[in-house]
Amino acid sequence: MKPLAGQRVIDLTQNVAGPYCTQVLADLGAEVIKIERPGSGDDTRHWAPNIGTAMSPTYATFNRGKQSLAIDLDRPDGQALLASLLRPEDIFVHSLKPGSAEQRGLGYEALADGRTGLIYCAISAYGTSGPRAAFPGYDPLIQAYAGIMSVNGHEGLPPARVGVSMVDIGTGLWSALGIVAAVAQRKDSGRGCRIDTSLLETGVAWMTNPIANYSASGRLPGRMGSATAMLMPYEVFQCADGQVFIGCGNDRLFRKLLQGLERIDLAEDTRFATNAERVQHRELVHDTLESITGRLNVAQVTAQLEAQGVPVSPVNDLSQVMQDAQVQAVDMARPLAWEGGPDQPLSAIVTPIKFDGTREFAEHLSARVGADTQALLRAAGMSEQRIAQLVSSGAVQI
Image (cartoon, rainbow, N blue to C red; front, side, top):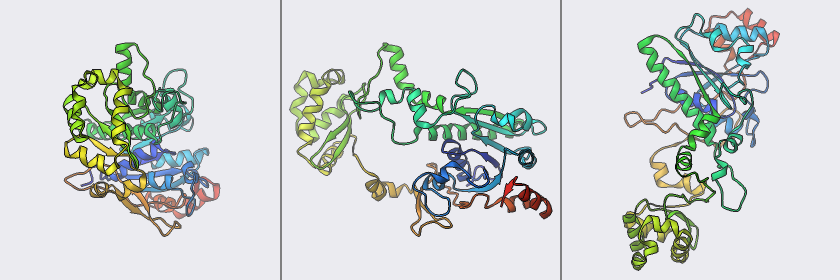
């Protein structure tokens, strides 16, 4: 099942947020044509570690299922070429700074003229209005700006970046969701629309719960490591050979936790009786429970608590994650090989959606900048003479 089969995406994005959006669309069946700068291509091609022919794992993992069309959009003939290739009902996605697309004749008004079905998605750092609209931004920058770093890390230590690109990937998902919604709407109305997403708006959206709690109480949330302010225990505990996360969302589960740890006697202590009391006496509860888990192995704690139905998980590293039977059972990782790369294929993570029990995975990967330029221009009806002229002028790379 390919829900977006027949849809074509012109992709002017680079780095992570935009490419993740268009990769999701490719997995869902869309034809995605990635526009890259002649020569260097997407910046992520050169992020460490660089493997194979101008290729990094970051580029490979966010650009599956795409064809590479190399056009110099700083040249008027390159700008005109791209506009001429755009079909009336294409999906156009870019992550240029606000105003940059308009300067190149690639703004929404210019491209939507005569293309009433065009779906146009612009991804920016700070949004399309306000004093910072024209500023550049990256995932960790927005984690700092949107307050995410203020609640991440441990008390008394510097703010910490969340170790994955949650703002970038979240923005990619919001963009893809908006595009899919616009495709559905267009089937009824026949009209496309403009979609705007930004890293900042995604960052603020991730802070929904802390913002709600702050607005209700007036108290700024602090950094609590793995813990949460609303529940106790709901954090990491040390074991003899590693760590586990234990999450008790109610008093019933806490009693089951005590049963699993063979300390049901603690339930009689008023400081342990209710979640409100446990939150108030957080350090005492943590130290008491850790004095028990610290004498046991991770496997022992996990087995004893799972037997009671208590939510518990070992704190796995990536080696453990990739070898885990449950991770393997949900079939998220697929091998991805590319021209000029190492013999060992990359473990590519698929879009986490199944349709009727199956998962789509777009494997095509253009290892070379502009690898698909000639074929795409020919398919658009361009003569060999005209292609040669564009190559000679530097407007395109083949």
